[in-house]
Image (cartoon, rainbow over all chains, first blue to last red; front, side, top):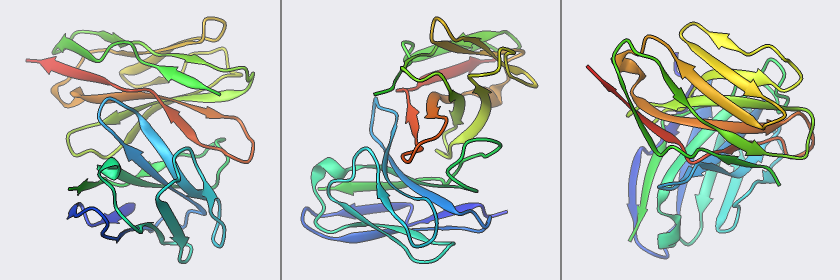
Length: 115
Length: 116
């Protein structure tokens, strides 16, 4: 079972470059999320999408844009990468935003380094 | 705003022994959910156990159980009969019961080592 798939797994960018992290889920989930994980910190929510066609800011949205391309795919774009965006990025999905009886599934992470 | 605190950056346990990981949180909400996630070296986040705040009974999943103290805002994870495969980073997380910004708030994690 694929679950949540992220690409690429590793990427090195130069300051000012742009790139898009791709995420796809095959569980027919409505809600999708992007988190970042920095050393010594827990995961922090960047953006989320409650359902196809909607996106909302999370805790740390500055410097990022997202696109919910369809129900399966949710991409994260860095328009002008900065060293402060060096992090591990996790995509996740859940059936809905509601917690009741609802598990969030995470991808394996994408390690991004900005030099 | 809600916060989650894990005061133990690292813990170690002998194989087959029991270990308890601590988590405290701060919230003004009365209804919420608490989770423990495991992150092995593969880095994928795996749900270990969840607790609904309105339930007084502590959640249990096989060798994993929690001690949920709502008044003290404490949510510890007990791992019994520890196995080598339990070695991982463990994150405590909080989630509001509802609202427009339904999101997980994570602690900083506890790195668990299991000694053979």
